[in-house]
Amino acid sequence: MTVTTCIFDAYGTLFDVSAAARAAASETGREAFGAHWQEVARTWRDKQLQYTWLRAVTGRHKDFWQLTQDGLDYALESVGLDGDAELRERLLALYWELEAFPEVPESLSELQQAGKRCAILSNGSPEMLKGAVESAGLGGLLDDVLSVEAVGVFKPDARVYDLVGDRYGCARDEVLFVSSNGWDVCSAAAYGFATAWVNRAAAPLDRLDAAPDHILPDLSGLPEILR
Image 1 (cartoon, rainbow, N blue to C red):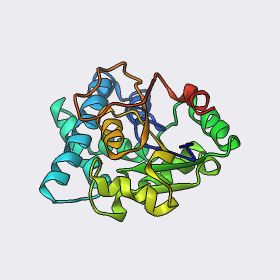
Image 2: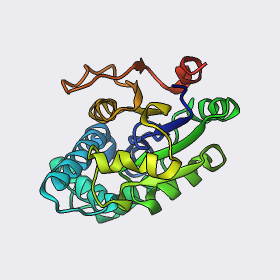
Image 3: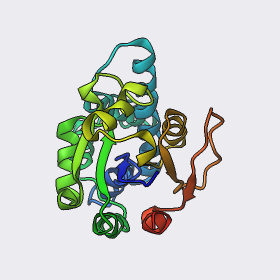
């Protein structure tokens, strides 16, 4: 069946999750943080994701903004910077203004011109996603932004992927699901979506029940595989 709808994960797929820490590290007077920013960015992201999985498994849901704060607090403490309240607030403010990866606007524009619906399906809270989309200037290139808050559980719970069919009334094999997270794209493939893994880190494939249909280094090759 022909793909009619392209669904994108947000963080790490469209938006560079390291951008907040990188921007803060470049600011005057942040030499101590500058020595650790890459480690903080990596740990922040790892804990943010781990907390989504743990809360999904235990049924103790909190929205993604709270988990983003919790992950940052862990990351800052891990490098001994948990006492810097001003740094914490600055990093959280920058997270609402994450940069899109360079190829994202053109890739979305090409898909839009090809008649494909393009939407986000993300763990992010609606307010966070609205801020990121507006900051990156992607509003005119997306048909919708879907958040897990509509069902109160994080990916890869199938109820999250159900939101796509509920919104568009399309069959699963009409959807191309695109994510930079291997676990997310493998779970979406098992669900029945056509899938593309944006493997920006050249990571090994997760050992799960299904594999992505396409593996790309970034989004620039996506329009071509749909032609």
